[in-house]
Length: 306
Image (cartoon, rainbow, N blue to C red; front, side):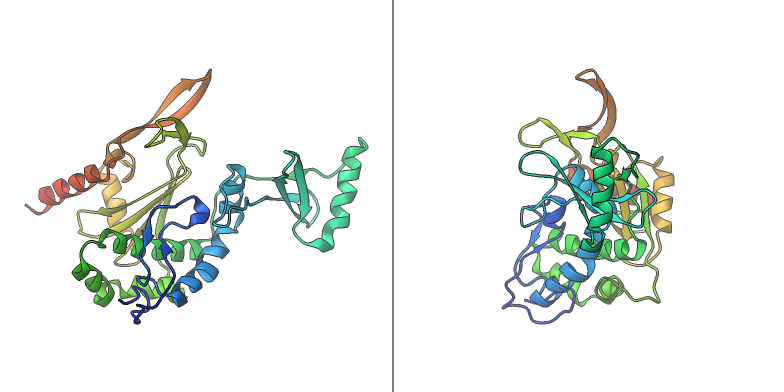
């Protein structure tokens, strides 16, 4: 067996690779031991995933909706003290009470001064916690590249010849190398857009109860026969071209298909607004069947090339 990134012999590797990191709530999309060697697994965990997932864009959503990391720990919400150059964090303690801490211990005194003022009814500098989503572009691009190549390998698991093709093909070397090194001479563009509000619900596939629509993923084959990895996270949809740093073909696909989502409408679902418990609530309704998406792609390819 060889690693899909460095192409080195990896039969003795012990790590299993989660295509979507466990820290985002994924437990099931896993590559077998060796497809990503121990060295690459450790590198991606520390140099690609960690810097991005600790950025406030991901960290605050995970903390707000109580998504634990792979060790079961809940992240804290990152914020600031207004008017002060002090970063703070907020989390819920075991007793259910809020705990506010400085991000750096040297600022504890400044934080405690403001807490004391608030407790005594004095004017204090507000604590600001923003639920914004604007991940750093370079880090996000490498993260998408890494997940995209791994998800392609996941799709190929039942066919060893396709796995070998993925490893040996120079077609995938540019995105493979970009994920590994983050080559500064390349700007690997991706698409990002907001599809629906963060608090949108969906039906749990097993229990049928309404749960948060956290994340989704799929591959899209467009009319140019380009492969795109699509990643959906709390309403924000990303698309990256696995064959090159241009998303022109994806933009054409969106225009051709009235801006539908490759994950939602293409797979047979839709976002609707319903009144639940007296409140307006956005819900994803439908089967979300990935096979429906493949049929959609095949139909469009036939229309385009025949």
